[in-house]
Image (cartoon, rainbow, N blue to C red; front, side, top):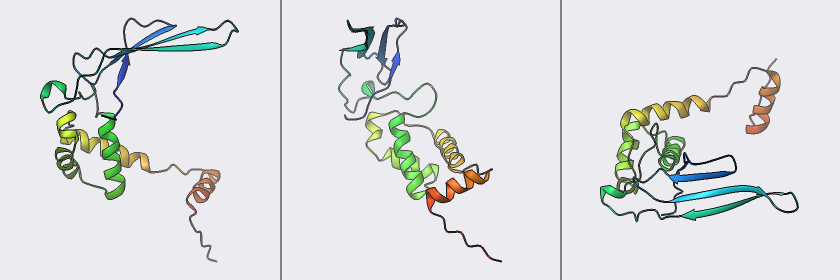
Length: 151
């Protein structure tokens, strides 16, 4: 599977040694450690070590990728963003498409309420706050909006 997995900082992390563990799978032993230090020339250097493996994704429920504690999994958010921006789908249609997609067997799907709230957040972010003349000019230059001045 090519999708990146979410890793969260482990409680045994320190200032110079950070341990991250997989949060997408239940009882997953995949971890990576980043150690920060200075080399002999005094340049900050990093070492990264990886241990453990992710479970092999099958159709059984024990290997389903968990949703975050709050919100929707980032991989599913990318797909929802694409559907909303391309065709402005309704939340029920988005859920129907998710149930018929590759995410059904691999990810924990969001609820209809989560999808509708996320879609409203996306639509709220789309609007631009044009309060000054310079922000108006930036908007015109960015999107090449033609302006017709009538007298």
